[in-house]
Amino acid sequence: MRLLRGRDLVCQQAVELVTDYLEGTLSRSARRRFEAHLANCPHCTEYLAQMRETISLTGRLAPEDLTPQLRDEFVDLYRRWQSEQQ
Amino acid sequence: MSRSRPGLGRRPARPILAVMESDGELVLRLRSGDERAFIGLVERYNEPMLRLATSFVPSRAIAEEVVQDTWLAVLRGIGGFEGRSSLKTWLFSILANQARKTGTREHRSIPVADPEPVVDPSRFDASGGWADPPGHWIEVAEGRMEAGKLAYRIRVWIDELPARQREVVLLRDVEGMSSEEVCAVLALSDGNQRVLLHRGRSRLRQMFEDEFREVR
Image (cartoon, chains in turn green, red):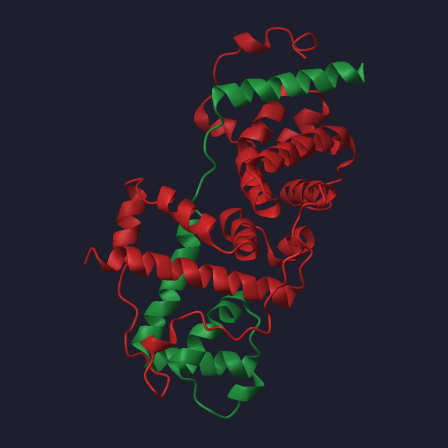
């Protein structure tokens, strides 16, 4: 972030900072510059919203159901393991 | 198993909400020898583990072996699981170790110093401002997701990510693990984890834009 000190961010730099911003790892001054850029840039504001939406959509994936066959295999695995314990 | 819990199979089905037990509850029940708790954990984590294992090793067949070995290690180790880490971290760490044991886990370099931009430079003008700004897609994507028509596509896009980006995205954004947990499982530094996450998420965002820009 050193390179950005004392200058206004441009969009091409801002998109590279989005993850650091969301992760909370920007320095205080870099965060201020990032937010100052957003305040004047609807496109980068939209870009940030889209990154948040990407994270949100990805977080809504649910594991596929176990097939009955695979389920039976795991029941067998468990019972084999249990019988070996006795 | 059913010897110690007679009548297990005849229990009435429980309401859906009650079926979603916490990981901690399943662990407690598994420790006391409850077969259904084991199957509950398998239902929750077998597929995510298989996806991660597929990224670690060169073939689906090896990945399936790694996952099966992981479940056996879980059964052996569950009595000693102290809950200092989350169950997820523990499971995925065992998985990563099992994958390393196969000796086939590739050592891929992490291009941290690689300055490759996450947005096509041709979309910016000479001063670094947007020339081709991001097209709107959030509302359309939400509609598709609610209609159940998007999850499959997102899975495909995640599968298409470079392996290390895919691993970080799967654990951070699909499984919802913290950066600390993901660093521990994947043996990554915090900085490298963040670079991989940034690239993976940025690529996925571009996939959404590419997909829905045509619809508009």
